[in-house]
Length: 313
Image (cartoon, rainbow, N blue to C red; front, side):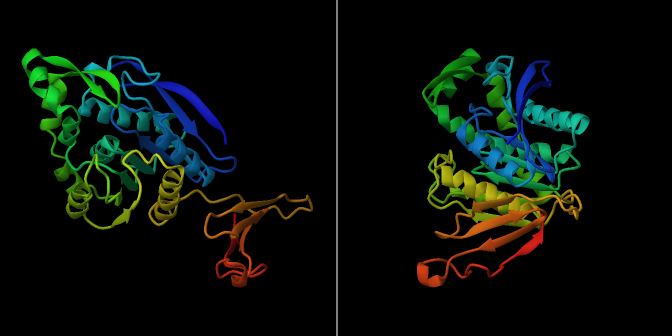
């Protein structure tokens, strides 16, 4: 899968490190992904989801927020609002160099940021959140024991996921001033809320708040059994599968090139679908078929040679 790394200028003037995962074939749409608090573009969940979406024809941009990963700047000087502004800058970069993102995806605090940024990205038609808090101030519970010291001294060092970070009073003031639910109410875009009912970092009630505040079209998908960071490879794959299928209903995907009617031989590609033990997608030229073993072999309902779906590219 093609993978491009580059930089773009963030709202603070720093160079932010980005990665764009693109499909081997035609690009159906572009997506922008926002990672979780203090994570980075290469955290497993972000990387796995981006690669899986690219395999479905959706080119996905992810980047390190200020002071994280390979991006310039000091994390202590960043705020929720600056992260939102950098997401808008990332969308601007895609618009100027490729095409504006039609799909916005955010994980954890990145989900809250993507909801706040969505209104400033007019081309975006579909927004998906994964384990997102309904209020950005929720993130401060991760370092609640240090809040008093930060407010008294103006800044302080806290430990997050075993790593030290400096948090300033400006960050606390900024998240306290956010009114995310008011923005969700006026989103005017299709919304997909994904959350695990056993998430012990951001409770499921946050998903309820977001879903209730949003207008239709809106959908909720339970990530039962998944942890907050989607550590399981199968969980990230499931999230990508659901987003890819859901977005097709709301996003004008670029049509595939017309079928080649020449006599040149076509490659046949067989891929597992992960549905059952034997089900596979068979691709040849512009056509796709789904094949399976008989039910007697502990397979699903499609026997070999019986076509469930047969469609252009």
